[in-house]
Length: 401
Image (cartoon, rainbow, N blue to C red):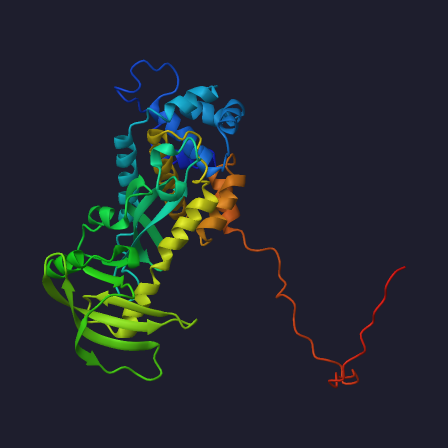
């Protein structure tokens, strides 16, 4: 971040993007004020501060001298922001997303993964609904209209999870149609839910040594070749080598199947090609898939990603990319500050101290809690206090006339 500790927290955050002076040679050819770089900065700041409408972004720019100096714009119209959403190049946003993800991975290059499992990569998608009329371009069955964010979440540590690849689509695109663009590495273990069951993919990944743990559907048919013994006290029910037929190609493949039960009694069948781990380890790896659900929840709740300013196709893709880019920026700021707070608590403080200096903000983060109370302590009952004997009192019934 350099020697800029006296600048505002907001400016230091936006400096990590380093895009304010960017002018696209095609989109900004005739632009007088609102360049692509300045527009992305305004939209990212709006996401970071949870501004609900374009009018809020406009009013904030008119009153924020630091933001004016950073973008080189003193005022702008809502209509200009709205039109800009239709012209920001997606290729540039893809590059910006990849650059931030790579920067985060470089800063965590010493991470050793999740316990002894290594790096884990949950893969899943989430759906965002569109208005019934303006979202007709993304129509799906039963009058449902929306878009999907197919995400590969990289888990480098137990408390550090970032999306390092995304695929955007309409809601009618099945998860299996996007998975091949997300499974591209061999130094991690991919975790899939039932929406990604594809025997052809499983067979190919086993042959290419791509590690995976995938939940099977209840109707999956397989032949048990060898069954290992499991402890009676374990939550694992079955650990076996099985053979499965891919009906599309007519070929069979072999893999490991682990059946386990969660705390609520729900049964899971997962298929994997990791044979060096115990069955309990495989069940723990699948539980790590929940991290991607928490990521989607964070995006929807804290970055207002479900609120679109413009519902045209290109504008929707742009806003989705900006939402994910803002999340990566939040993670980068969090690492830069070396704060021990959770990401959500950190961002909440950042919003209130956005116009303070970075040094002042770091002092607040390091400040120890003022309260010295250990909470409500359980006190001993006095010896002469009468104890309840179990006799029920008569119910008091009063009716006001």
